[in-house]
Image (cartoon, rainbow, N blue to C red; front, top):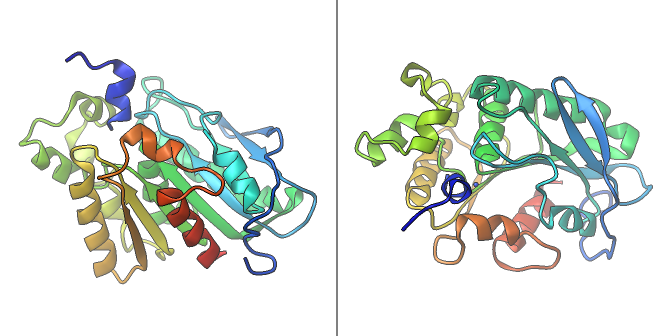
Length: 269
């Protein structure tokens, strides 16, 4: 069977003032803002102040994708009365993963400092990262560079522990990850598990699909978070979703993983 480059990369992606579930708002067209070396898109569903904020970090194997790869997430956020901010970051091979992490941290900090101007409440900010974006979001939230957030959703990543990932494949880590993380001496530093304990851990939701190594990598990550005293919710989508399906499943009023994400958000903002 021939696997395309994109498929290979994909194998690697209601209280007052809180979530207003059930509203029929549609996502507005985004406002694009430059921050640092990248850009972000802000979707504001209405004029009210103090709205909770969903910060989305897209996937793409660290080499493709951009802030416009939001699927149905703008409508999902709008239905909950949330402002959505989709954060972009520079891509390989023109940069490196450490610089991507700096971009993501800078983007999240920009949102915290500026979102009130758009009607958002920075104290009610949930970060949702998908695939490579979940790796970058987890790394920068857990090590403190992204600052405090109300919650972190790690949506179907498999790179929480790079040495463990290499062991899972008997020392033959897939080329996607070898290319993204070529320096073995940096694997520990670029693994979110190594960032656990460096800063306060927000409430977390960890989800995973049927990608071969994702259940095992999620289990190891969750165990280390719980050992550090973190509050971690989980959603096992391995019998229901492929890597591509699990991101497309986030949609207004949907069940499954979308309902789990909606419930997590409602509990923490």
